[in-house]
Amino acid sequence: MADPNSWTVLEDFRACLEDIQIANGFFTDAGLFVTLEPSQITESQGALIALALDGLSPSVPPAPPRTHRQATVLVVGKVGTGADNVQLSLHRLIADIERALSGQQRRFGAGRAFPTFVSANPIPPDKGIDWIGVEVRYTTHLLIG
Image 1 (cartoon, helix red, strand yellow):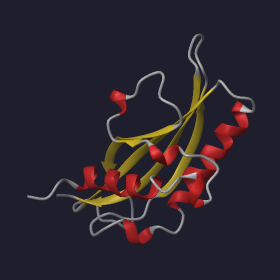
Image 2 (cartoon, one colour; image 1 turned 180 degrees about the vertical axis):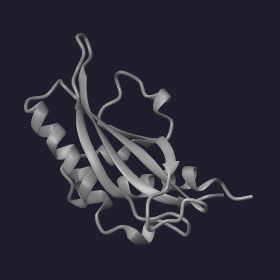
Image 3 (spheres, rainbow, N blue to C red; image 1 turned 45 degrees about the horizontal axis):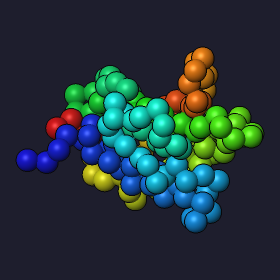
Image 4 (cartoon, rainbow, N blue to C red; image 1 turned 135 degrees about the vertical axis):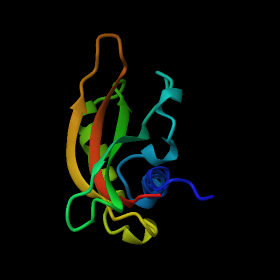
């Protein structure tokens, strides 16, 4: 039996985001650590991207609600605060995430619509935390099953 589309779409995202490497013309190397298991991230981990399903809801037209669900995918990017220009690094990471997904329709297989950008919101650092991050949300329609 195949994995649910709600999981497979996260793997589609991962395949796109793993391209984020300076060697590939991106600003950062965050694509070197892309995880589907955000709970396994350590405080000392450098630049990274974590993916999670943020929710499922009834689909919106043109996808029929009896056969599809709208999924919200959460992409969390993290950069360390130990260097200069931390805010610039965060903006570069956001740009990298958007660029990595741009034009990648072919990577999203049957039953999974190409995602649409919803929002990007910074995660401010807490006292004693040595990183800042961003939550980027996308929606997509998934075939139920």
